[in-house]
Length: 198
Image (cartoon, rainbow, N blue to C red; front, side, top):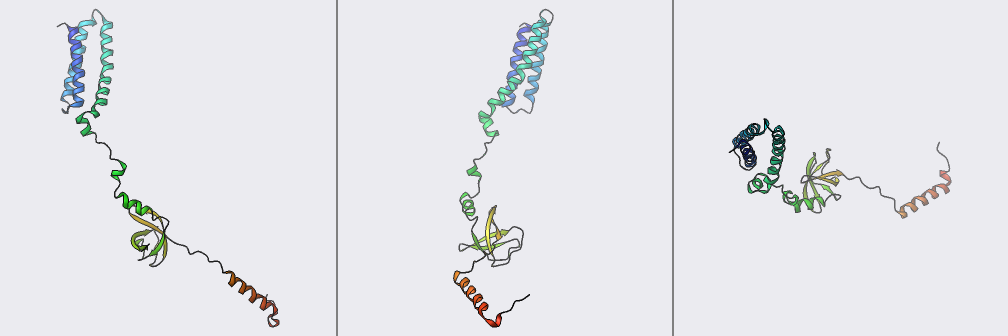
């Protein structure tokens, strides 16, 4: 076989060995064989064309340099779709499969905004009573005594985060307000209390 035939044959063999290296784990032995084949193809191309047709030789060099990354890219693109590639490239689990106890998490999230009372001292973790259940909870870093009203503000993991509830200011009843006004008018009409305090 002529040197130009050997150059093309060794180039094809080198590209095939590069593809084989991607698919067959060999510890780099196939890569070494591919490198040897590609170097020998350049040597054969030099013998065949450099003296009489140097443009053919340099065209061969450029072609080999372009085919090398293209072959590696195609092999790596095909590899994940092969049986070996599917075993090596594990697919990420679905979000529903990776969530621990999804029903329990949804139930705990539904408690945000509800109010209850501490069943133990929160230092900062402890127990609370909410809707007749004893639940694990923790404060936002403050100590809260037992029996204090608290509100669930968030969920951290599987534990409720609570904050002491502020008591609402109660407005006086209209009847009490009327009684206060009548007592003030009685004091104003009483002559014994007719003086001003300075």
